[in-house]
Length: 242
Ligand SMILES: [Zn+2]
Image: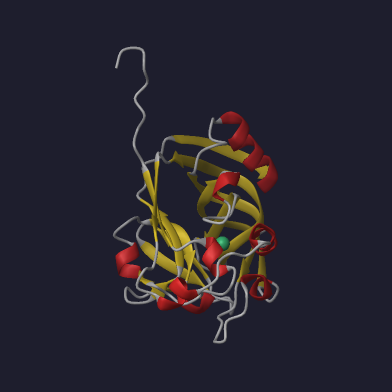
């Protein structure tokens, strides 16, 4: 391999797609036990869109719209989740950075703008704002209708972990293009899908993936029957996940 740099192989695994949630495919189609065979860090949601999942070091936490954070049972199911086994490639210290500043720094300092990669941030945050979707019952609404009813939580001066992914624009639909980050406080007092945050002092770790494994719920008749040809899907994802 003289003169050529070896690329470290690293894989991200996803069950379901964000695009499947858009028209309301909220029913869980893979058990948490099965999901965790494919990765022990990641994000997702629970069956019925019952909150925001944060998988930290093999523990599948679920932040619920009541504000409660609980651990999912192995036999509970998820409609959409993304996980990976940790194999960090880059780490740096960040201080006093807003979410926007940090995201710009990552994309300007590392050659990952065309790469699907994981982001982990551990340390102290001066502010955190999360949203948590509310558990839905049938007949299911659309993702956008649900996102308009989300619970929002704020906290200042706390320690915690951010976990999530960056997806280039070309993956919009399979995932949410751009950064999709979830948060859990060390004391579990607040968690959810990150709307905004400011880092006080933290370690940022990045893991670029050479491979994406996209798993689909072929045993789910509702998925097979659903019309996923939604003309404004990108717009609906942007509005729901932004
Ligand atoms: Zn999310």
